[in-house]
Amino acid sequence: MANSNKIGNGDLLHAGEFNFYNGVWQQSEDLGKYNGMVRYTLDNKTWGVSANAKAYHAKWNATNQIPQRAIDDGTLDLYGNMGLSDGGISNRYSLSSNFWSKGENYKNDFNAYLVYYDLDLYSNNTGYLDYPIEGDQINQKEKRIVIGGNGEQTWFSQWFGFDVDNRLGIQIRHDEIMGTALNRSQQRQVFQTVRQDDISETSIGLYAKNQVQWQEKFRSIAGLRADFFDFNVNSKTLAANSGQKNAAMLSPKLSLIFGPWLNHEIFVNAGYGYHSNNARGTTLSIDPVSGDNLSSVAPLVWSRGGELGLSNKFIHGLNSTLALWWLQMNSELIFVGDAGTTEPSGRSERYGVEWNNDYAVNDWLTLDASLALSVAHYVGVPRDMNYIPNSVGRVISAGAVVQLPYQFFSTLRLRHFGDMPLNDTGSLKAGDTTIVNWGVGYKHEDVKLELDLFNVLNAKSNDIAYAYTSRLPNEPMEGVDGILKHPVEPRMVRLTASIKF
Image (cartoon, rainbow, N blue to C red; front, side, top):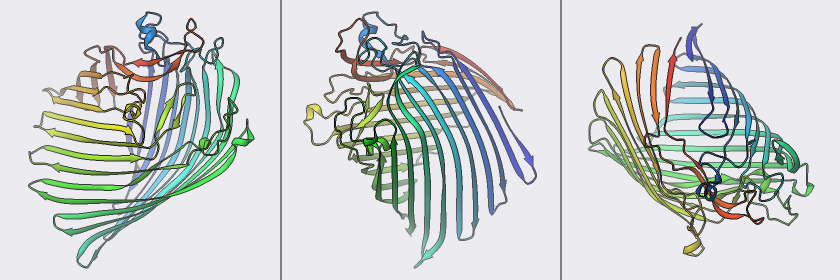
């Protein structure tokens, strides 16, 4: 539910949502989710301010991925699980504010935020591989306070007769993470702490952007971003894994846009970016389980890429964009089943094509369709071992919205994910996933009714799939390599009624 009221010179928006769901799994999901927000906005044409408060709480039981071999031989049902106590509880509360102003030759935007977040998560990825009696359930705990803000200023001017926009900005964020822990547990009862840490992480980003309209049908956008990170890890279980690391990275970017000609634009984008690694990995020196010496990871990992594209509005009501792209990363992050986390791997390269379309055919029919094809592989390794696990090579999405007489409407949507490798040799694959959803509804003023049929074709495809070693109680102690999967939910009907007041 949501509502907006005029208070003074501003508007007060308040909204709430709650959701209860048991799911289709043999183990009831027993999900309880609550969302709420309050926002006050004051807009005075040349300036504005807003204040926001949000709250979120969720508690659930989880059915995680299970071995394909156990489904095939009937040991486990497709919607079964390896343990009945996986799940978690999470909370998130935030306060934020925003201020903006504008004039004839400038505009600015500033915001600040304060967030509290906690997570208590239980999962079992490998069954009974490491702990044949207790089981391999892990417990991940975290409490985090985040404080930060962003600010930017844009100036509109002319240089030697050319229209120029210049923007300067800064982003600051500090995360104080208290007692983040990886534990071993049985039926949600912790019996061993693998590691526990307090982490402080601070990041500062400075950026500049310049846009010049060189000709009526040619403009450029150049950007430069500098990022600074500081990680401070205090290990409560192994002092050798404590430490402090910092890193900085400079990322230039450039876009060239030509057109429009006959409602067509050509664009070229190129630049550098990055991803950050887990703070604990940047100071790691000893494996907390085996005691082996380990090498720490780089705090920041560079990526570089480019894009060549064409956008057009040649047909009335149709927005279409076609782009060829290339991306290279100095390191990938790969899921590790027995740790329930990710670890860095080698350098990678990806390239592909994307085609996106939105078509308002008339006042009662809207169509959309997108296609993404990509190739991903590791660089510097033999061709028969250069597959990137879980890299999706084909994604198709298409849909239609039909406005019917008397405030009725209908929707139809298809989502397709192509086959993807699950290991670096490509010998294990996840298989295709195709989901079709259909719905019909009625909307009049503040009342909305919807009847949805999910997974119309009742596909049994994978929602999640990984390849690693796992063990069920009756299997060899060394475990079995293979595919672990989590299926999409079967065909189901949902009726939704909403009233705005």
